[in-house]
Image (cartoon, rainbow, N blue to C red):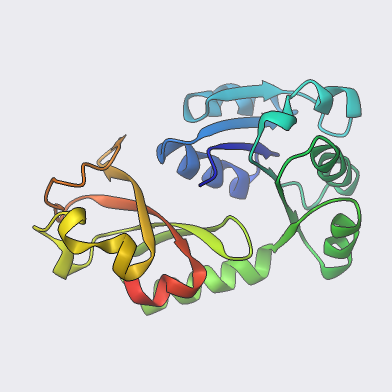
Length: 213
């Protein structure tokens, strides 16, 4: 399971992804050149750094080699996106994900080191489809070709039962990594009954999503 993430570029996608990961208990580094925005978002990250992401020296100071995943979220800033993807991969990051606004940009980012490309319109359509299929799904984020993070309300048949008895990992191939109640997030107690008014943050193989919706 991935433990540490760097989210480079704090547009709407980057903000939402960083918050979801941080709320799930992951170590999250966020970076952007907008100091006001970084100060605003700092409470939802482990580390918040204001820097010009198009400069190699600045990227070298971020310590990307310590990250399991780097997500490049600047699809409209080609120079910065290319530099971030290239430096992240050269630093030995196992998984580099980059957001692209077009197939041409996606191919460029793959050439310089990105392992996975996220296309904004395609992902928005996929998320909308998942929401239309299920009332339980609240949010959906791609992590890799096979893995995603979802925020969902518990299914009716789960309420009042605990995760250990439900055997969610063994039967459905999902990992409940955190529980949200109101504005608070906390680790899951496998022996505590699942309540109706909570949200579950789940890491799941994309092939298993249909089993939980």
